[in-house]
Image (cartoon, rainbow, N blue to C red; front, top):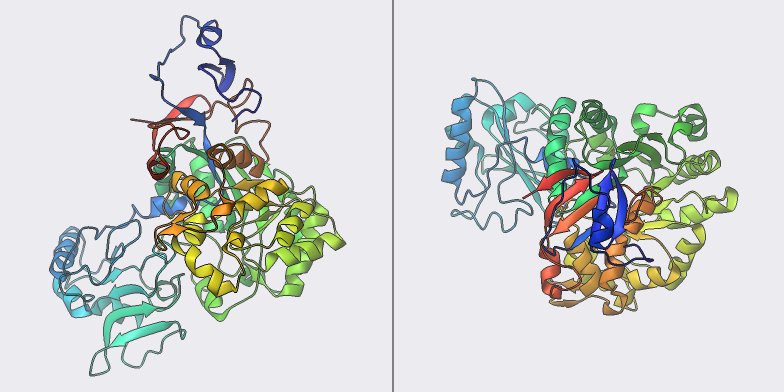
Length: 539
């Protein structure tokens, strides 16, 4: 990914940085008595990859709760819960992962032999002395509704849920039997769970200590796919920020981690956003606070406040999200916040389409051209909007797993587009010189499916390519997860290429991404991954 030297035979590494890059002889001249020489047998090596919107912590959270994966009947779910009950004390909560198989939890309840969800009575039979709650998925994993969670009779009683309990939102259905009593099954017509943060708030949520304990496993999972750096542009809540700080302080941080702050406006009350930025926000300016492994800078912003997000934000934990649900503001307050950020040199990230026009409005008041604000999760853009993004100096992060692979064939009709070429228009953005960083959004965690989607534009759901004229070359797509990823975290002078003096972050791949068939691109994995000259993954 070094334009001046697109290929090399060997590298020498010392002090966590590349010392020499080129022919084997040039690298071996630096060999000393303690040098370790590794022959990779012709394997492809790339700079370490950057995930531009990772939600990495969720991968660790999945391992905190007992899994129901592989259960193909209610009887098997009961058996799994009975085993958990035998290990628990009477009265202890049993909270499990959702019914189904990760990462997408597809085909339910049809994949169960009974073709339906278990009831509270069936959970009671499996754990008569314990309250049981089967959590819902984070809806964007599967991206189909409804979300489903299930509670036992003891859980319902502890949560105060009975015949007269109303749903907290029109998006929630409390399923009831013929007598009007809750069956224990909750249906949610929303991708972000609401029930566990409202009706089932009595069930234990993720603690900060648990989040911290699970982060090393999350990092290891991402490293297995060659990822060496992440950017959390949706922002992180205080509890997740504390967890990252604990891991960093303990010396267990192996991922170069760049976090963006997610404010909780409910907790802050009616404070003036501009005054807030003046009081404490300047530490988030530029590259912010931290070091080469862990850094916090910028603010995630949203326009709009919903009743459902207020309800979610009233819980003590953010659940799967990791960001504050009440990060949205009414438009005038949001504009005041963004103007204050622009004047203070603070980067702002936004992931919803309505943020682009607000960014432009703010720029007319306080220029943002040189602040590297980020417009994420792009869906569809006109050529004029691409030009606007270029002129504002924005970087872009994508969500191709959703907007090409899963929903690309639906967007043209939904958005009233004249052409599918406007859907995630990577070619237009590249031609405009806009830095684009690909992202996983944790669905799934490898960057190679987004790389493949950028190259092929293939949608299995549609059985065809979506906007094929917007495809990138393989070199361009790989540049999005290497050089552009370093630009995203303001580290292009430190990483993102294999060149002397840069951090020795690299991924040794099990296949050459320039040579494999297009259909094989998304299945590439890392044989080994290195951060700062130290192996963080090896098989």
